[in-house]
Each structure stands twice: as C-alpha cells, then as structure tokens.
Length: 369
Ligand code: M6R
Image 1: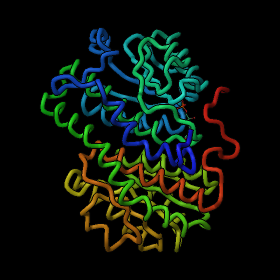
Image 2: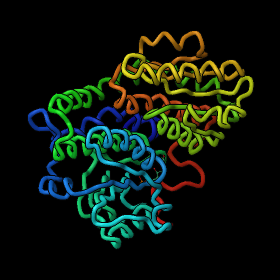
Image 3: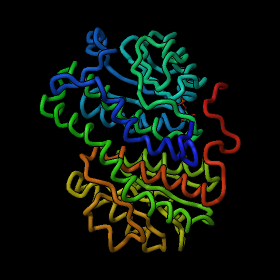
C-alpha cells in the first residue's frame, strides 16, 4: 500500500535509503564483505577468467556501474551486455565465464533466455535479483537477493540503488576471495556503503523540494539531454530512461566525452542539459574534463543543470542550476547522483498530470521476448 504517499513511485524513492541499507545488512563480517549465499563458491570464483553481466533497461544500467567496481576490486574483465543482444549473437562464453544476470522482478523473459543460453554453453550463472523465488534465480547456479522490498511503480527506482549496492558487495566478495582487495579497502568500502543511506536521506531532505520546483518550471520542455563520465555515464542513461518512461519527454543520455563526436550538434539555446559532475577532490581529472564539457555546451546556449558534490564551487559560474549531493568516494557517487534524477522524472510527470506509477505502453515486468 501507498501508506499516505501520492504514488508508489514517491514512496519507493523515499525508500531508497533503506533499499541500500537492507541490501548490505548481514553481508559483512570483521571488516570484510562476506555474502553468506556465496560461501562455498570460492573455487569457482578463483577459476573464472571473465564475467559477463546481462540485464535489460534500468537493470542493465546498474550493471554498467557494477563493471567499474568489479574490475577495480576483483581485477577481472567484465562485459555488460543487454540480455536480448547476448542471447541472439552466439556469444563466446564457456566454463571459464561467470554470467551474472541482474533483474528486479526475476521474470524478465529477455534476461531469462540469456541465462538459459549461458547455461547451455557451459557457463556458470549467478542471479542478482530482488524478488524471492522468481524464475531467473531458480534457473541460476547461485543467487544473491537484493532486499529493496517489493517495487510496484513501473519505473524502477529503489531497486536500481539496491542493484548497484548488490553488485558492489559482489565485487568486494569476489575481490576478497581472489585476494585483490587489501583489507583497508574492504573496510573503507564497507564504511562508505554504511554511510550511503544517510547521504541519500540528506538529498531527500534538502534537495527534493528544489528539484520538484525545477521540474514544475520545466513542464513544457520537449527535449532533455543527460551527460556523465565514468560511473556517471550509466547514471546519465538512467536519468534519460526514467524521464522518457514516465513523462514522455524526449531524452538522451551521452558519455560527456562523446559530445564533440556528434551530440553537441543538438545543443541550441535553452536546451536543458543535466550533467553528472564527478567529485573535484576524489576524481580531479574527470572533474576538470566535465567542467570543460559544461563550458562547451554553455557557450552554445544550453541550460545547464549540474548534479555536483556539496562544496564544488567550480561549477557555479557555468551552471544555471546546481543540485547538491553529499561527498562520497567516486565509485559510490552513482548511488547518490541518481537520486535527484529519479525525483526530477517523477516531478516532471506529476507537473504534466501523468500517472507516474502506470505509464502508457509499459508493464512492470516484461515477460515476453
Ligand atoms: O525486472 P527487471 O529488472 O528485469 O526489469 C528490467 C527492465 O524491464 C526495467 O528495469 C525497466 O527498464 C524499468 N521500467 C525501468 O524503469
């Protein structure tokens, strides 16, 4: 039930802090990540040479974020592929590959078919799933459940932050087993994961009204771009997808570095562009690159809405609006940066008087190929 909230989406965004906290709960021991469901699989994890993550829509974007963490911590190559593309291209996977599927519902047919194909080819399969006992986990060799709680709104929000959290826990578990993550990195990462819920709460308490007001002013907007780099890139894709899904506004997400290879031609005076800005202290190189991207689009008249760390003053001269997020290590920033984008998409759909929970043409779980 909505419990007093105007929509399930509003309720589920408000539950993003708990979605992260509950997913981490019970998965750490003595300063290390230990996922109890994966104990006993150490030999498998030491033996694999590659990981392929499959999923669709928002779940696939969480996988793109997860790739950075798994490669950084577990030092193993990761490919991310849309499940429906993987299934029909005769993929090169075998017993040395772990195919990880990610799905909120656990019933997405495209993802299920990819898992079955991976099994047929001799790969081991791991399901990261939010729904207990669903088909995909039942068809997989191993499963890590997310604990975001049931998600009702068609647009996925709290499941997305839980999916990234689950992938990060998996990356740290794998890194521990493979001996690639020093104990202090395990401990620091666990601290980061544990402080994320209160940081998300900070955004909800301090920025939600501002973002909803901004969405209200932008109710007549026809097109919006989203830019990001590194882990901010899949967040830009997620921001664009959410806006398309529930507000029916044309939206595109790009890697900021790709701008001058084409998309900058779209920029005209007044075009709103959301930019996910990396931390100036945590990722100074990326930060300065993104600030120059902002200058490039600003010079062409874009209306820049920056999602930036509290205290980042470098964006102020160039941004029309700044949506603040608390400080976090760069790898953990996506879990914070996506929150304003979820709020914005909901705010805009509300401003247009649309049904945010049941957008046209879409189903909560896509059980046909
Ligand atoms: O249940 P799943 O996570 O497998 O669903 C995958 C996509 O269909 C889903 O994320 C979809 O893109 C959402 N409506 C996005 O908000």
